[in-house]
Length: 269
Image (cartoon, rainbow, N blue to C red; front, side):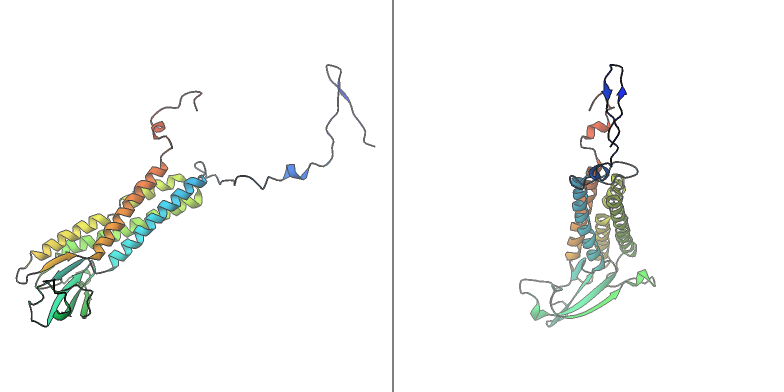
């Protein structure tokens, strides 16, 4: 039989010590039900599930902006240059469209041009295309389109700004992935900076200056200029990236932003 030991207390009562049997299994193992435990980061509290969902949603918006930027930068439909459709002869007409890296000329049949259009085009019509990359990126030679010469410095500046935008987007994406994996909200601040400073809109502005310089370089061929769908894609991408950067910045702010400027009160909550 188990021996019973009574220990006298000051009041004269006897206290029975706890049994020395094995501890219950439930006390040794953590509960498997209930709220999921969150990983605590080494430099701050862990991300809440709702906050992590918001970060992923904003990241999806930023990724859409990145994809649209790559599409716009890689295509050559930034600007269209089209002379009157009967400028050369009554059977064919020639138009040009170009982007950051290369330009294309396309010969169309005048009969295919819509009757309500005075200039040659649009470039979506079937015809004979001739595309080539700009040589000022390789051999330093300038391009010539309808006797007009593009402004080399502005074209190169627009292309370099577009590449800088892609680099900033890549760095911002890495920061967001680190914030989600490491459960650190502090990584969102450099991500917000990278996406907000993506100079896609600045690249569009510089390209517009280049287009204006091209049009005034020679007046021997009358041209009608139009900004094409690649510019629209870049505009939407720039708006998404700027909005994503601002949203990332808002997610890093506390729930009550004014608490950043007020000292904590003793005994306050």
